[in-house]
Image 1: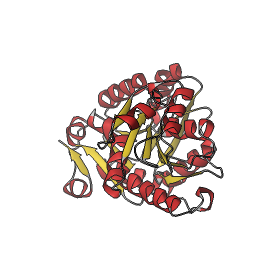
Image 2 (image 1 turned 135 degrees about the vertical axis):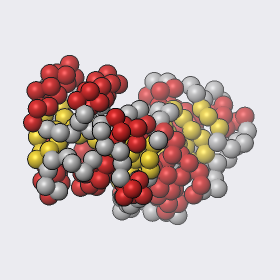
Image 3 (image 1 turned 135 degrees about the horizontal axis):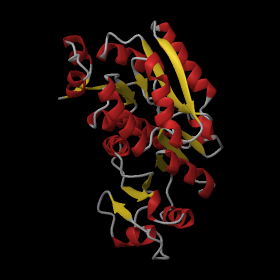
Image 4 (image 1 turned 30 degrees about the horizontal axis):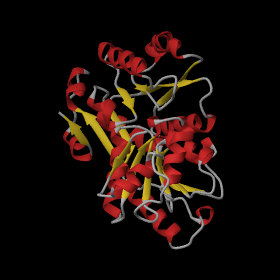
Length: 305
């Protein structure tokens, strides 16, 4: 079991968190941050949480043991609340930590994953598809149609909102579904002649390392821009992405913890939404596509050189 110390908590707390000590923790009710992985958005949420609280924080990675072991490490700390960062952490908290207040963040569309219950609250991290379409048009003004790549089991409401956003912006929306990840190449090539940009959502059949590598290569070779969903993908070569400000998500999670400690029940708390969005564009990719970013685009976004 791997537990990372956020402040100087003392050996008793660390041993208790690792399930190696039967005695109580040195501090009553520390904040436990249960993290789905060591990804930039999750680190940003942690940064926001730390900045908004002066309480001790213990970080436990979901991957550091079996779900039962991770749950045991959390319970050994007797936390007042657990901040679950990312979907894996939120679902582990829901399923293995009954009667422990869970505050999730960095989870888009939480209702889709049944993150509802007496002991659950959180922070919404949804991105308005209209903002994504606007960013694509700002980065690549000549775009007229977009191919939306998604799995066959994708949430129909998400696709409906994406289609409405594209059409409201005057873009032709081409839905391209695949039943398995292996179909991505064939489906992309099939729809390519009818679109001049691709939209890559955070879909489990599309958003794989192999899938992104293919889409990036195809985007550059065909000179059809790729709208992605994270700054990491833009830094690797996608043209543009819009994502929540995960530092703000961590700040809002800290406020939820504060209210729980004041006596509010998680089920009674409203679920706030991250208000600030970040638009990221890649200037080198824009040049490779044959159209450098305009001065307006550069002023409106964070630009990767």
